[in-house]
Image 1 (cartoon, rainbow, N blue to C red):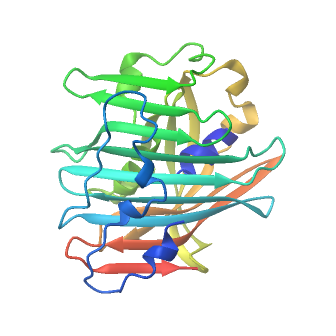
Image 2: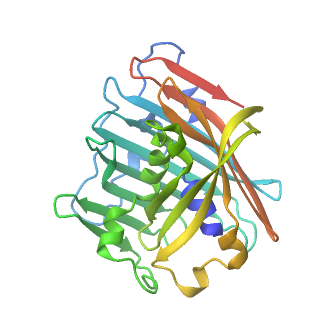
Length: 307
């Protein structure tokens, strides 16, 4: 459960550079500000190169920074940048953790996903690349064949197992990668606001397949971006499906305790942005909150806020 909190949701420190942009109708390309974008192809596992075009004219762009606290100690820093159009999307994320004994491992991970937007608004990944820069330097490349509904997963160094039972080819293909999943969550509720906190988000992280089952709570005032503000409150229940080793499954308390997710709606870009996450069980307390935000509307207006 703790792995979910610090990878799926936190993977979600480009703002100093972005903050130099001039408010108004300036031309910016936020995804290229990702600190590892220049080395996206330096450790490719095959001959294919992963291309992320510049944000097109008329796209919606976004850049979020988040900081995480465990027992009140700041241990996590994450950023999430990208763009979407009516037909395409791309997103970059990175996360660094300082480590706290057995509770929080020291990590430095970045990931990039690119894909298409179908006629019904669904996101369909083309590729997902993840690079761990720890001692193992593990790289994950997931390439999607959307015509044949298959996904090729290449991991070096290889994982010790694919879990019991492993995720099926159908489960792998139909789930979102971790980066696309966060963008999908921002797009929920566009047609019907009640859909934001209902249903499940299926995720495949190259080994584990799980659902985030969402349930509505209401509205609450919570602190993010330096101030207490009204936000939409949802519960997210972590539901393992396949690809788990027995020791990685949540215990009864973890399985029954939801993650508190708070969304702020930005009508200028029609996005419900997750601005705060909280998770509390008897032996563990963590909070991740947004500390910086930049949005670029399709007509080029820049919206900025930071704590």
